[in-house]
Amino acid sequence: MDFNEQLAAYQKELQKLVPTKRQEAEITNAGAKVLKDAYYDATKDKHYDASREVGKMKHLADTIISVNTDIDGDQTGASTVGFEVTPQNHARIARFLNNGTRYIKGDHFIDQAITDHKDEALLVQAEMYRKLTGGD
Image (cartoon, rainbow, N blue to C red):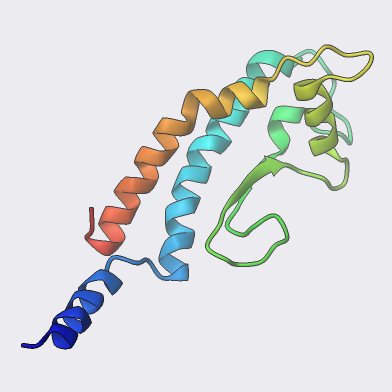
């Protein structure tokens, strides 16, 4: 076997380890589920008022969503976690609470949830990658 044939065989083996868009979407969705739970727990812990009467507007913790698309809604293999923007823009409210405003001191609850659960999300994604591709 000459060098070109060896490279072609090596490339073929490597190609098996590269996930397809469908597999990539499954991998990132597994990590997004971990972050969605982390967002929910952090929001419920810091900004949930059980005594508040729920009318048309839901509690902030109840508006967390995870979608298997990028931020623009395109299916690129990415997954997105955030807050609903319709009918009320809860993402805007969450940003104000997280980052703060001129009048509100931010508590960085989303940033902290990401920091605390990043490793767990990556481990879940790695396990899903191994399951789907058989690679390390």
